[in-house]
Amino acid sequence: MNVYELNEIVEGTITEIRPYGAIITFGEDRAGLLHIKQISDAYISNINTYLQLNAQIKVRIIEIDENNGFLKLSLKSIPYSERIIFERDKKPTQINPAQTDFSALEEALPLWIKNTIEEIEND
View 1 (cartoon, rainbow, N blue to C red):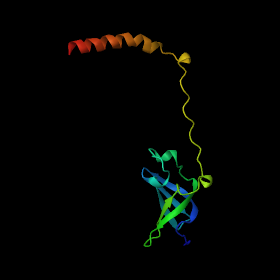
View 2: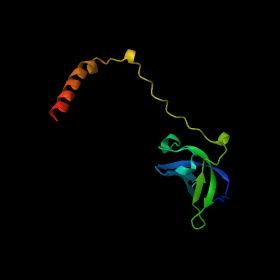
View 3: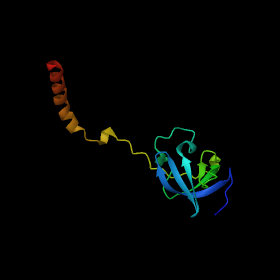
View 4: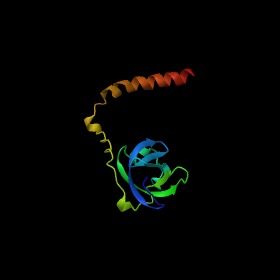
């Protein structure tokens, strides 16, 4: 079993991603948890925008469980210049109204307005 030390920066593989964090493995003998709060100082609504399954990642060991050797890890304590930045999906292209056919909506809108007025008047 490899010997790990507190505050050591190590590289591991992301083997599981959960809503609360990710499991990182180091070889066959050691694993740790990168809790969602240790990924960034910013609020994270979707952990998958920060991490990718099976990716190699550098993290800092912030705690070692003396009973089982399980590691608690931090990404946000790694200098930004040393962090692995994952490719993000490109943002969807904005819709150009001049190139979009809205004729079906244009035809249906007067009927929707009429029906809504009638519902309001009947209530």
